[in-house]
Length: 111
Length: 114
Image (cartoon, rainbow over all chains, first blue to last red; front, side):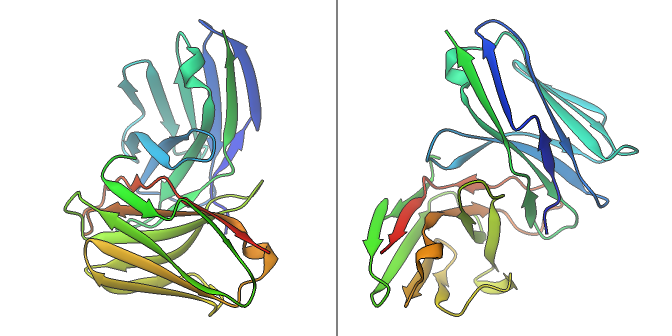
């Protein structure tokens, strides 16, 4: 069953602008993770935020988590053309490592 | 993508063929996963192996048969597939037993069933 739903499905911005992607989920979670996928390739883990955390930073990435609203956002600041990819949120509801992925947001950063 | 390799990268097979996908991880992980990624659909978890034991089988048709001979290798045996099985098949690995695990993915095998 689908857990995470990303919004928007597609986003196109100019280089240097910020990109914000949102993820909503349905059940309680242990942690939420964001992954990036370049076209036709494997996924790359970006950041993990635990259910008791509200915000986390990693380089140009900022992730927030609101468990009361069952939502998360990923902010990429000062975007670059190389950030062009699909971004997925994934939720882990237990200690099994089983992740449920959303449909993803396709980000295009124009040079 | 580093640390998890998949072969072949591309595969075209007929519906009557038998083929196998291979995944190998060099990260010392003890859990491995198969995912199916179809166009415009969320990534679908197919199988999970933890400590070489299958712990998840997500109602996958029997024409897909996984095998995990050791913690570093994972196979997906394919037989009598259907055209709708055409997709990108991704392998991933992680540590098991920790509540906060990230998964490391291979580059995938692009499968086309004709």
